Length: 338
Image 1 (spheres, one colour):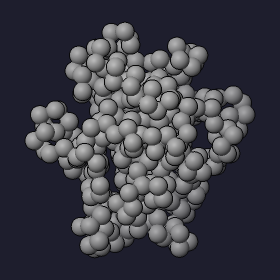
Image 2 (spheres, one colour; image 1 turned 90 degrees about the vertical axis):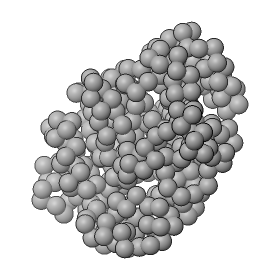
Image 3 (tube, helix red, strand yellow; image 1 turned 90 degrees about the horizontal axis):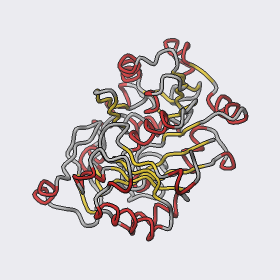
Image 4 (tube, one colour; image 1 turned 180 degrees about the vertical axis):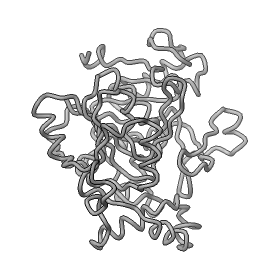
């Protein structure tokens, strides 16, 4: 089975939590990370917080083979640090064509006032590296001797795994409205972030897909500049407990209530088979740590049921806390998935 996990708003929806939960629950055998180092995914497991920018969030399952897509971008220093933190050096592999960000890319972005001051870029060198890739001058993983032991043909590995009936998950990054093509341009990232492009980054055709899981947070956040409908003041965000800080930059996230219009558009762009909602416990603290739907507060259930009705897509996974295991899983009931 192939599952694709993608974000429905501006990133920060909790994709890392969903992927790490599924890695254990579904006994995922192959996990592929897409995107670049400007997207951080947080995993809370066994009492430890992991903030990952390269290693797939499925690392929590020690049997999962971890792959980096050919369309992804890595940085050697971050890669080495995350391999050490997650102890995954023996099961993490990188495609020959994965791009490599260098210090020159980072310096180029720091010197660009439009990126730094107007767009509020994360300044991780991603945009400069993507520009070099389009101009066909970016160095790829296969050109680095220090990466030789990690190199593998990711599209072939994934497709052969699917032929053998293995459970595969693709971890998208950021969210639909940071898409270079479908987002709030120019306040977007340097790639398409929708489900179709995630597949393309890995090298998988659309007929291979079994499930597309679109992840929404119970409220909307975004980092940096760009429109945010219904944006709350800092004071209101603090009063409602919606204060967050970005995984990569540490910048305070701007916040707004759940936006059904954006969610409907994300449904159009991603054609999901199911929806995941995270941080329901932030809106309804009594939901914290709950793992059975019937035990969620009535207001939380009404909130979820309204989203499901409006978006005409089943809500199957409900995050109720930061830990991997803090999840209400309704896939068996709604989709017949054990």
